[in-house]
Image (tube, rainbow, N blue to C red):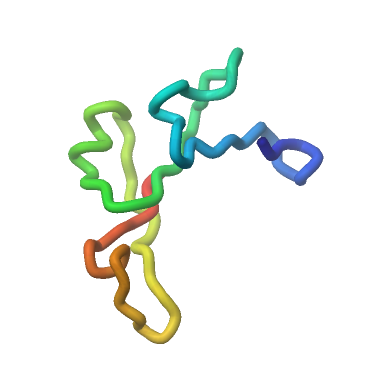
Length: 76
């Protein structure tokens, strides 16, 4: 978990490979969630009321990989 010692105003935790199984850290209720991957905005709106695509996932030099081919993006 990252937080004030890392220069952040609020704690940050990663749900990579398990957040959906056990949720956010005990005693916390996230106000902001950053989703990165191959999501459809409509799918994310089933859980959150305000979903915005921040940027597509891109690779240097225009390299095409699994994420770029499937239009992965960063959502807030």
